[in-house]
Length: 340
Image (cartoon, rainbow, N blue to C red; front, top):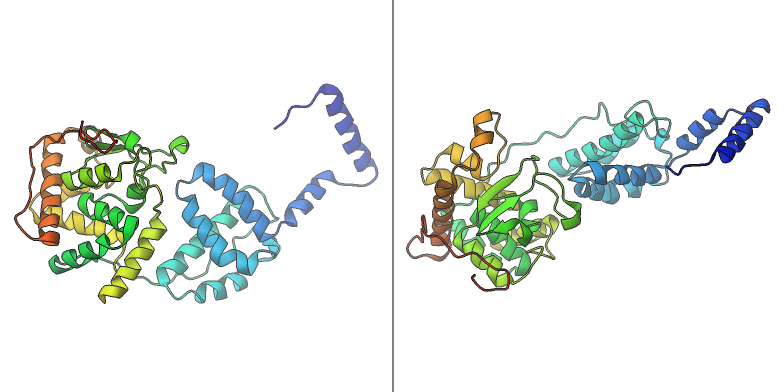
């Protein structure tokens, strides 16, 4: 807020007192101005707020822009009711997408109410029934690993990023935002918090995470020959679109980038390393204090697990013997395309 001088403050106070003397109500006028907000204006104001507070604001903002603004942009926000929300959500055929759109709309209205914006006292999304969804446990079968691997090879930069997800099991959004500044001696250290200067979104659960990059991923990074963002032109949405095209071309059941992460985790446990090791490597939140303090005490074991898992995936993808580099210390990448 811009500071004003004493003389200007007195002038402003006199103007307000004069309006009051003439029967005006400045506070009511301000409320009236807020109540005149259209949903589009409200969405813009919420975007400015959420991009500072919410690491996943881009995804929600895209849903608002694509599905809500075409219908509600010019409507007074205070005039939108449950009767407007219900048919809009019902028209979305994909249950998960419909629920995400409803949640995004609800977040905008909830924020407006807390800020006393737009004369809103009731969230019109409350009471709108969410679509029933089924828990998805999709993982690649052994035969599918080879099919998808070959398809990734023909899918450009998105395909390379999808290979990296399958090989190291980290979240798609984190792979898309991978930066060389966070890689040292082949260990990828992901800050839990947002780093705006590096366009790093932070981890999903807000916990910093350190993971060994197995030899095939090291080779991918080396071949990219980039500094800064490794997959500079790849987004989570682009990888999802690539997966949909690949599934259609292969004639297989729907599979998402997150299912590749799930397939990696399944491989970890199938190799006998156990669920705790999988949770640790994939940065699943744990409620145990011991896990927080011990997270970085498994270096040798985690390196062996990551190399063994990547070796098994490569074996399924390309055939031949499993390439396990359990305790071989690889040379760090200097991000000029060479080994240090």
